[in-house]
Amino acid sequence: MTQDTHIPIQIDHKPYKASKTSMTGAELRVLADPAIGSERDLFQEVPGPGDDIKIANEAVVELKPGMHFYSAPATIDPGTNCETA
Image (cartoon, rainbow, N blue to C red):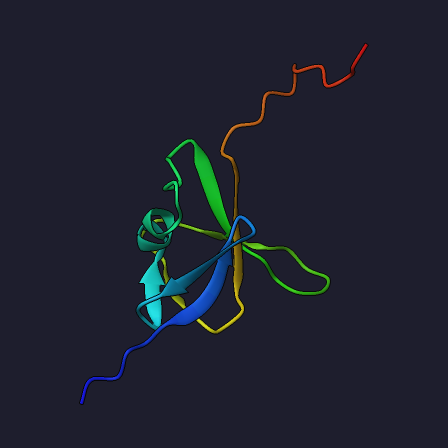
């Protein structure tokens, strides 16, 4: 009998069910809908104090239920004015 693995995780505040216990950064990027493009970085949220972990495409992540991931622009334009009139 084959065990069906579905690990609940979140990417960019949306729920997903991973079909494997470990996935690469590239696999996590395409699991998201829409897929996360190369213009964005992927991070694993680390609870509490400390830095979140940037996930490279080739990095393997051991998934646990409830893990949270998010994407952010790979390049931030410091010349952009965010003030509103």
